[in-house]
Image 1 (tube, rainbow, N blue to C red):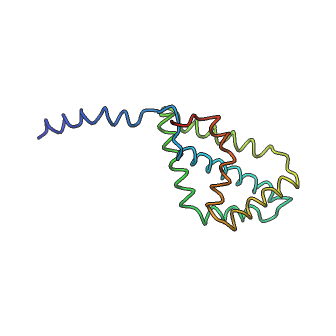
Image 2: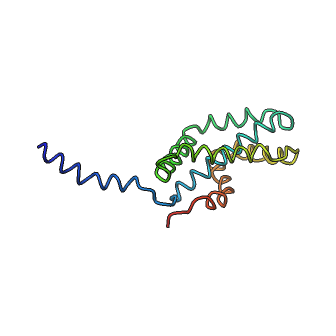
Image 3: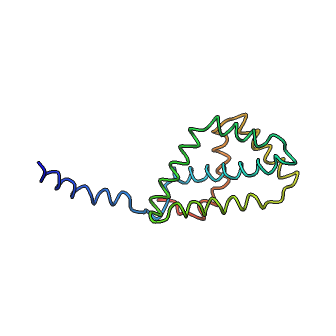
Length: 154
């Protein structure tokens, strides 16, 4: 019995090792999750910035959207994390923190203008009225940014 267990473990271990190997690409669902996470990070940062002077209440509106869609956001974050762990097994936390930090830095350095905050207000209103499906559709705006960074699996 013990011998059969060892043989089974040896047979399955290469398959398990192959499953965790980097694919050098992200699948379409992983790309979608990456887009949604990036859009969420951007909207969070933009709402926080606009909240201070030009769009009071924006931070609370975004937090309400996040709270109402927590499970869907968590699913996107989890899918994204699994892809990053697979593709960057040695330093995925560093890589994902770098990517997120790059996006936060970008979002925080956009000129804070009335037009910018009006656009953020429009995005928040659309998501508030139409829900997560609208958010997901709006996240496709960052498709080119994501596919410039990651190859899509064919």
